[in-house]
Amino acid sequence: MIDGMEKIVREQSFFAGLGQATIDLVAGCTRNTHFAAGTMLFREGDPADEFFLVRHGRVALEMSAPGRGAITFETVSAGGIVGLSWLIPPYRWSFDARAVDEVRAIGIDARCLRRKCEADHDFGYTMMMRFVPVLVDRLQASRLQVLDVYGTPR
Amino acid sequence: MYMERLAEPVPGAAIDPMQPRFERVSRVQREGADIWTIEIDMADGFDFLPGQFNMLYAPGVGEAAISISGDPAAPGRLVHTIRSVGMVSAALCRLEAGDLVGIRGPYGHGWPVDQAAGKDVVVIAGGLGLAPLRPAIYRLLAERARFGRVVLLCGMRSPEDILFQHELERWRTHLDIELEVTVDHAGADWRGNVGVVTTLVPRAAFKPDRTIALLCGPEIMMRFAAVELANAGVPDSAVYVSLERNMKCAIGLCGHCQFSGVFVCKDGPVFSYDRVRALLALREI
Image (cartoon, rainbow over all chains, first blue to last red):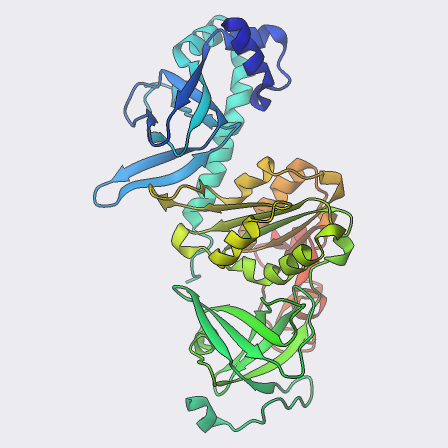
C-alpha cells in the first residue's frame, strides 16, 4: 500500500522536484481518501490531524455566520492543498471544508508529518518551503478579496 | 424623454471630431444592480476595433468614455455596457429605447488580436472589465482557427454579479476554449470556483513563450494578474492591459487623461504592460 502511495505522491505537481527519500517520508504519512459530494472533510474547531491534497474534484472552504449561513471564501481544485492549520499550534481547523462534488484526495496524517519534520529538520525545512508559499498565496488572495475590487468605487 | 426638450439634435449627423452624432437607443438591458447595456441600431454601420471606446453624450448632462462591448462583425449594432457610478454614467444608464444619445468615436488603440494569430491567447477579465474584452472574444471565437489555445478567465464579485452570464455559458460549450469563472465569495449553493481571478492563472494551460494575454478589470487586479503571468513565464511585453482615466476630448488635445508621457485616449486605452508597469506602481503622477 505504501508503495502505491509513493507512486501517487510522486505524481503530484505539489511534490515535484523532491528527492526519493523525501517522497518516501511523505508517502509514509499518506492514504487515499474519497468524499462524496456534499460531505465534510473537516469542520471548524476540529483537531487538524489530517489535511488533504486534492487529486480530483473541488473542495469549498466555508465559514458560517449567524443569519448568513455558510459563506464560501475559497475553493480548492485538483493540485491544491486543503488545510494549513496543522502547521501551527493549537492544530485546530479554523473553517469548514466541504466536498462540492465527488472528491478524491491524498489524506496526509499531520501528526505523522510533524513528527518527521521535528525528527529531521532538513526534511522539515523542505516541507516548510512547500507549504509556506501556499500560505503566502492565500494571504495575498485574501487581501484582494478584502479590497472588494469589483465593487462600485466610492 | 426630457432630453429632447433640452436639445434637438439631428439623428445621424456627424459634424466634426468634437461634436457628437445623435442616434436613438434601440434596446436597453439591465445586466446587474448598477450595470446596463444599451444598443443602438446604426443604419449606416459603425466599424470599430475590439478595445476601442466611444464618447457617449447624455444630452444636457455630459460625456463619458465608454468601451464598446458589442461584436465588431456586426457593425449595424453598436453596444455599450455601462456601470452607473457618476452623474453622466447614471444618466446614460437611465436611457430608454427611443431616447437620443450622442456618440463620438470610435477612439483609441484596441486589443492586438491580429498580433495574437498563431499564438495562445489568455484573456483575463475582472468584473465589468469583461465588457471591453467581449469584442476581442467575439473575434477570437469567430476566427478560432487562427489562434492556438484560447483561455478565458473571469473573476466576478459574487454569483449574482456575473456579467454576460448567458454568453459565458454559451462560450463554455465551445470545446476548443478553456473558460473558468471564479467569484470572490459565494453562498454554499454555488458550485463553481471561489477565489480571486489571479488564482486561476497557474491552473490554465498555455505556452508562456507563445502567449498574448489581454487583461481588463480593476487596476490592482490587472497588476496581480500580470505578476501571475510573469511567474508563469509570459513576458510583460506580451501582456496587454486596458486603462481607464479621465477622458474628455478623446483625441489627445485636452490632457485630462495624460498618464505621465502618454495620453490614455490617444495612445491607449490598451497598452502593453511593459510600457505602463512602472507607471501603475506610482502613487501620484
